[in-house]
Length: 110
Image 1 (tube, helix red, strand yellow):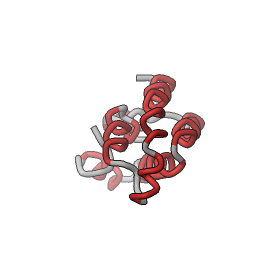
Image 2: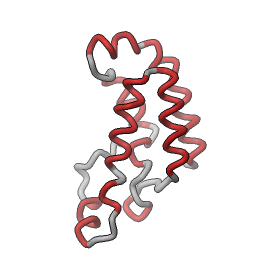
Image 3: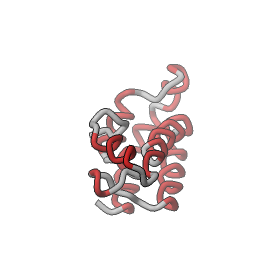
Image 4: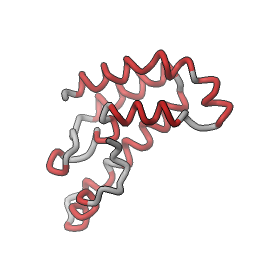
């Protein structure tokens, strides 16, 4: 999948995300169904190194993701990009970062 295809897949979700924006605000969290749909696009593998099964996409496309989702629901966009960027943090080239990526319990949603 290309970065552009990921953004397009997320854009397809925006009508349902926008329709549930009010409920997101009432619950004070994104709807689980929306997070599952976003996860199904592979968005949470955005910054994960290719070597560990991620996409390793560039930062400018990350901004596009936030803008696309933000048009539908700012809260859902914030939580999504927050989770995406935290998969970027262990990228530092150390022996320990490899062990972090090999575990299946990080925020990578499939």
